Amino acid sequence: MSNVMEVIKKRSSTRGYTSEPLTEEELNALIHAGLQAPTAANRQEIHFTVLNGDNPILAELEEEKNRLREITAPLHNFYYEAPTVIILSADSEFRWSALDAGIAVENMALAAEELGLGNLIIGCIYDAMRGEKKAYFSQALKFPEKYEYEIAIAFGHKAVLKEPHTYDADAQVTFL
Image 1 (cartoon, rainbow, N blue to C red):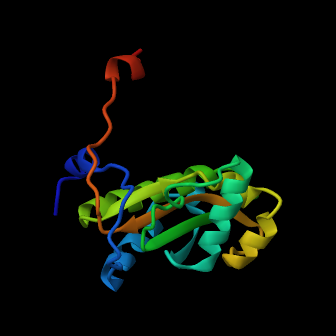
Image 2 (cartoon, rainbow, N blue to C red):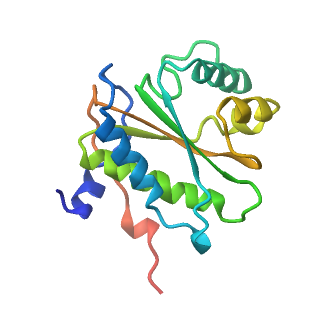
């Protein structure tokens, strides 16, 4: 097992996947990494909807995202043809749900990197998931009652490699 700091340094967004599906062990490890994330007041209100990349609802989400953004010919779908997509929803009445979902998805992203898998954290379908088709998508994705989309993540075996992003700690950090 790698050192967590090394995994954090290595992780980057993957925008190209092989067609090889995740194994049951890989998928379970990713789901459990999300489930093990801390939540405010230990509410554990995050729900995980797991989809194969060829699930028709993903194509409908892509179409709605593109319609709202007035995109006519995208090069890739929003999850870059990953074989697995997990959509996180949460209690719409709980103030900290978005934060809790973000923590869970980061746990999953780091677990994927540890497992040698690619991943892409996805927010670009927010308007499609929260727009005029919100009820339709929530029902199709079997969200629990009063739950709504927070964030998504795609997983698969890397077909492309990308260096982690750089940053400027001097400009981004203030010590008081």
